[in-house]
Length: 233
Image (cartoon, rainbow, N blue to C red; front, top):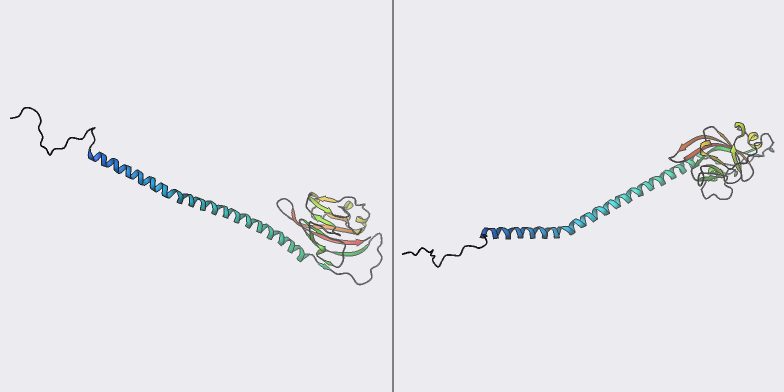
């Protein structure tokens, strides 16, 4: 006979409290395990990613250095090429063993003549007769140098003596000798093709230069070709 109250046998388990079920607990533990695995993976992967980023940055830096070095090498090769072209084109002039007549006020005594290729930042000596390449040197001009192209100014400069455009375009010894040269520089804007230029050298000789061609660079002439004649007054 029953008394209206619920009865259970000894093998029954009490119902879970708080509304939770065994399956909920299992899912929670599973999620915690996944989160822990993700955190561990991130912990393990972070140094690898950092190393890869460092390697990529180092490679980019190396590539930039390589490009800069290649550009510098190209510039050096271009400068060397200009110099070699000048040396190849500038003649070797030998002294004339035959006696020369005394100079006259109208003609002078010709000492030498020929083509001069003058690269940017180089000097030449117009006086010495038996010398190759017009005694071309770099911008640290030594004794006897007469002309310098570029460096610390914009144009052609007389390192010794004077330099001026030929008076009234008179391209001759007489025109230069009587012109009373007093200048020392000619700006790039006045170095134009076929323009005659007079120079008084370090040995007080008279030189006439005619611009043949100008090889222009980005900011200045890289190479100027002249026809040159030098006289003793």
